[in-house]
Length: 74
Image 1 (cartoon, rainbow, N blue to C red):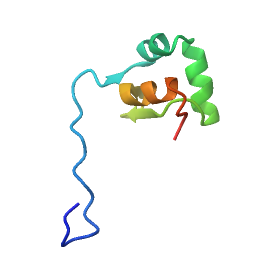
Image 2: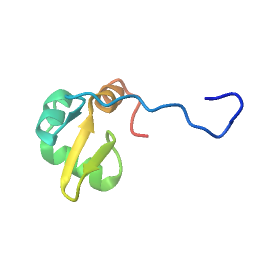
Image 3: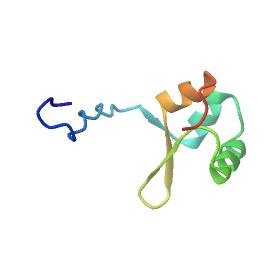
């Protein structure tokens, strides 16, 4: 954060290729079924999911790692 301008957020981390994974890859990483991810998303639990466009659902690898480590959903 810039000291002279307190309301300026820090720069966002650059998203690298491979950081976002689809449902199939996310389920494999967590060792669960794709339907379980969908149920968690519907209930608002589980790892953070991101919508890309109107229909694509993706998961960030860091969110999956945090969820698997027991830090839970945001």
